[in-house]
Image (cartoon, rainbow, N blue to C red):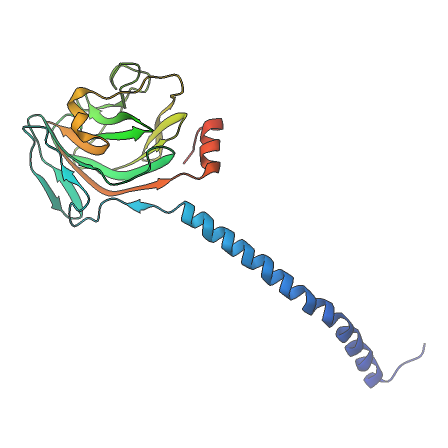
Length: 245
């Protein structure tokens, strides 16, 4: 076997490395361009998923105290809006421009005192209104009011939840052209196809339109209220299989 001098071996290796170097250098611009496109796409996705804060935790900016007649005090305490007990209802609503279809809403809510609903969220479904009730009819009913003329205690979205006074609950509502879905602490409470359903609200919450919260003879608290528009992919997925969180 012929043994080559060490310096010749090194020279041969260096020649091989240099021969491959241009190809590697040529690949870098393409890789950078591809990474840039991915970052731009990710940025656009983040913008689509951007949440809109509806409550700053310090004031009622953007909100109106709802004139139900007999309403209790509305105050701010420890970063939450407190809807004091009324005779019968207390609430706030907003008329700011917000999505009215294909959106998510989430917030934290608790019953401070009382035994009836501590959160009645009236919301738009396109041009039609509907309400989500938490803790109604004796303190435990959850559901939508109204579907086909039946309120949350009577229709197929109705269920019971063991709410504890003084405990915060994380609530999420999804509204699309085909479905209304609701969760409490990640537990899905209802998922209803509304394409052939008649939506309405009870006369007591008419003043909450288009988007507002109310309580019934109960003190409730709300914080971390926010909303976002859904992406087309999320709307399609909800229509196909229902959303999961």
